Length: 74
Image (cartoon, rainbow, N blue to C red; front, side, top):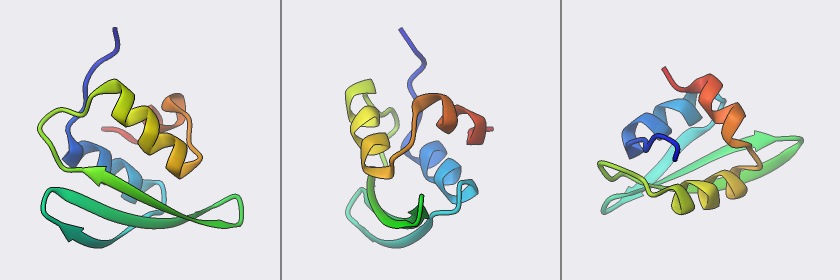
C-alpha cells in the first residue's frame, strides 16, 4: 500500500508543477494549469489524508501520473 498524502501537500506539489490556486470552497481547492498545451482544472480536497482512489481521480483530472507527482512532493 502506498503512502497517504495530505491535501496541503498535494496542493503544494501541484503549485511546483505549474498549477495555480483559483478558488476554494469549503475544504476543496480549485487549481488550474497548462499540461500538454491544454488548460486542466483540478479539484483537490484539502483533507488531512487523501484516499488513494481520490488521489488517482485528481491525477486523472491533471493528466499526471503518480510517479510524476512524487517528484514534486517534498
